[in-house]
Image 1 (cartoon, rainbow, N blue to C red):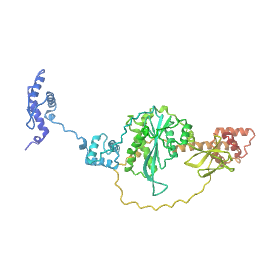
Image 2 (cartoon, rainbow, N blue to C red):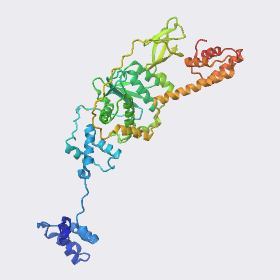
Image 3 (cartoon, one colour):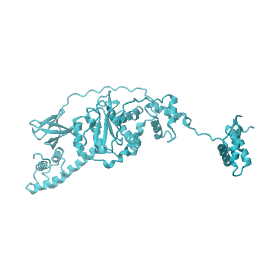
Image 4 (cartoon, rainbow, N blue to C red):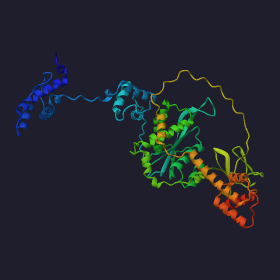
Amino acid sequence: MDDPSDSDPRRKIALVRFQIISAYLALDPARGHKRTLLDQLASRSWPGLDGEPLQVAAETLRTWIRRYRNGGLAELEDKPRPKRGVQLLNPDESALICQLKRDVPERSIDRIIEILEETKLVEPGRLRRSTVHRVLFAEGISARKPAPSNVEDLDRFEADAPNDLWQSDLLVGPWLPDPDCPGKMRRAKLYAFLDDHSRLLLHGRFSFGEDLPHLELVFRRCLQKYGLVRRCYYDNGQVYRSHHMQQIVATLGIHRPIFTQVRRPEGHGKIEALNRFIRSAFLAELKSSRIGTLDALNEAFLAWMDVEYNRRPHGETGEPPRDRWHRGIDRMRVCDEEKLRLAFLWREFRSPDKAGIFSLFGQRYQTTVGKKRVEVRFDPEALLEVEVYLGGRFVERVRPFEVHTHRRPKPQPATQPAPSSSPPAPAVDWLAHLLAERRRLAFVEPEPRALAAERAARRAAADQAVVDRLRHHLDALAFDEATVRDHLARFGPFDPEAVERLVEQLLAHGARPDQHVAFFLDHIRHHLRGGQP
């Protein structure tokens, strides 16, 4: 029976090598003669595996001799090469790589590797960029669109510290169903702010409008999360040049906005680069997601911002934006939440009629100051309550005096039956994975609703303290809690300690505890708000 090893090419090579070094092993030269014998053997020609003459260097002979003495003939065999490149992948893994690229053609090689590793579809460190490229190239789906070039020389700059300079811009986003008009689609648009020094994406929010209230909402959230900025750098959009935006920065002590040169947006390069990255890394992933509402889009964007963008090293700085921003956190200037609220209120002047009624955006309100010209401060997104100021001092809060229905609601259109066939499911929903990861990491970040609820809780506690102090000092028949709360809702809040001191002073100077609570409320308003008793 034939020996199977006779057909093994690695064993045949080992035998040829043994024949070459056998003379050295048989002579076993003494110290001082080894190099001479190696040179003699290296100068000879030896029959190779295929019969062709073979010459071997002295150092190669030395290596073969050492390997043979350590492990015998088996050590003279060539070691099998580890599988590399495409051979490392099985057909299913290669197909999955191609499917990820076809689902979202904008996905880069690095992102495909990241998705496969983060979703546990491939072991970390197993894939190389060259391997993925070969797989995609073999399928003809590895081409990348060339980027437009700009031959004009541009100056490079960077802010010295976090919160020294913020940049902002508008990005046109995807089409989504309009909740106000069933059956119709609207284009979502993103306002976002970027810290110039750290490249930290501070906050961003999609909305169906691109007017000032939507921009201010994002700007205010950035100030709540990361403190006051020294300067803001915008393009020449009308919404950024609005008078109210200038009023906000002036109220908060921020440098007046800086704008790009006309017809030269390249100076806005960092936010433009961010917009390109958002298109390729976030908006492109919508093709393989189930996002269909504006709220779901904003939730996914926050997850992408917190989990992926702000935590991965930036190509320019070499470190994650969040880490770079936190290294300068000692320079952060925090603004009081109430001051922020007042700074973002819109302001209009009105002259009430003799009944104290004035109009604002089609709504009528009634004030107690009579025909005096007043300043009305309000949130354009919440006109159910506005604040009235007289001579720069707060007077009261008023609600709509009368509400009219201008037209009938439109009838709901008949819903169309869903198509029977649906497109094939994507290989990986990357945005859903980021959402789950954000929840797992439990980002401790107050949302606007949480901040509003906290502010409402502080206000409720202060009002309750005023109610308790008035109940304590007045007779039960003179105290009316409903009247007190209505007064506080319109003219408050008041400092409970100041209210108690004022009530004690009134009682000490002749006021009686059985006088109606309205008497004390008028004096509280007069002394603490400067209003008319």
